[in-house]
Length: 140
Image (cartoon, rainbow, N blue to C red):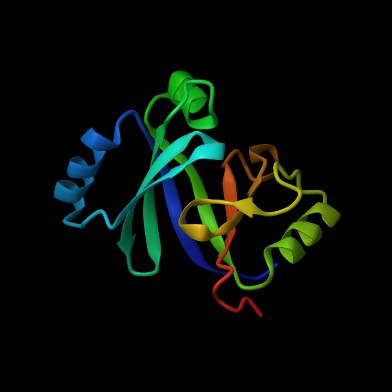
């Protein structure tokens, strides 16, 4: 598997309305995009630092993954995402062949038009890990 950089760090928050100004004042950055990903039951807000982004995640449904996370653990780091330097499906196939437990066996659409897939924390030292592929850029 070939990775190019940390794509983003996902942080679960109760409210984007509260969290965006906090992060703008705390980090001196500007939120450049807010987007709802309906099938994941989440609203996202993005900040960019170099090639890496911070993604704030607000649940739109208490039964969604972020809603459940917030109920169990409260606000905080939810996942780390890496950008693939090869087609995402190739990375997933290689990981599965090496015994890594996949949450997503094939890519699905995520925020910002990226193709995404999650790896189970049981196979990644307890860290929810996301792999991202930008379909608009060559990954070869």
